[in-house]
Amino acid sequence: MIPKIYIPGKVFETIFGNNTVDIRPQGSAEITFGLISNRRDDPMLNTRMRRQTNFDFDEKIQMNVIAKIGDKIQFNTSYNTQATFDFEKQAKAEIRRKGR
Image (cartoon, rainbow, N blue to C red; front, side, top):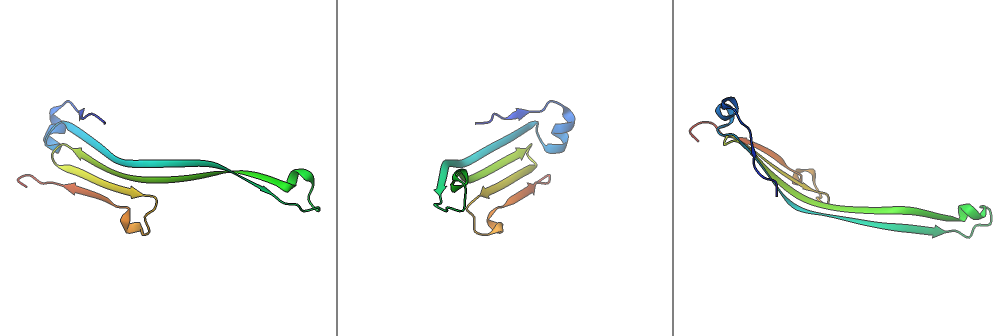
């Protein structure tokens, strides 16, 4: 989906192992849009205040992103709006040293 990004220059290659940045998103997003209208037959309220209309939004996002900077750094991120616990929303960084 996103093409690899090439960074020219010897310095970037020396630090990160090669000259590419690769970002790979995966997942889904769902947005539900609705309208809620309530009516109260309360004679103490004026006619305009008896009816209330509000917007209703609901979003569900499940996304994983893997990003690599050269050969030496890799980021893994997971995000889920319906995750029960915070540890289910993870971000990890891995740094590879020379020779590994």
